[in-house]
Image (cartoon, rainbow, N blue to C red):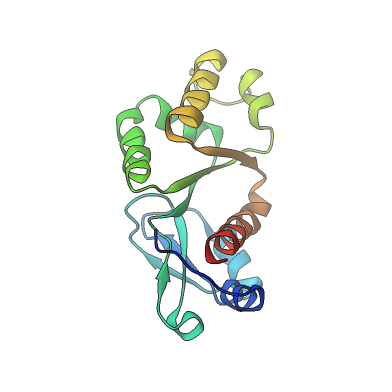
Length: 175
């Protein structure tokens, strides 16, 4: 990763100009895109190699385009059922995506739109046959094996979570 050295004031300006990159294969994310529009957060839809969301800072603000799509991504799962499918039937593909990101040195934030989180997993409050102990084991394995940051969130706060994750990541990298 390239090293940067911006002042605190420059970083504030840069993070305000941030453009969210949305993977073109991301579906059923109208609530997130609506949040971006309402908050006047720029976004563009394009194919990402991994993750569902990333960001860049345009040349108009930084002097050159600064892309973070290989440094920091949010992988979004819309429900515990979707995640369950990724950890069982699609596990090999899912692991390859995390492995590819890890090989690039990319930090992956796994955002699951399921506010009940671990409590709902332990209580088997999801509609699949993936048993709670196996579900927990898989999530903890992903945390450790791929250094994944796993967060459960209510869908209405997903857009905010994505933006704040990238803003604070950028602040740390750019100083």
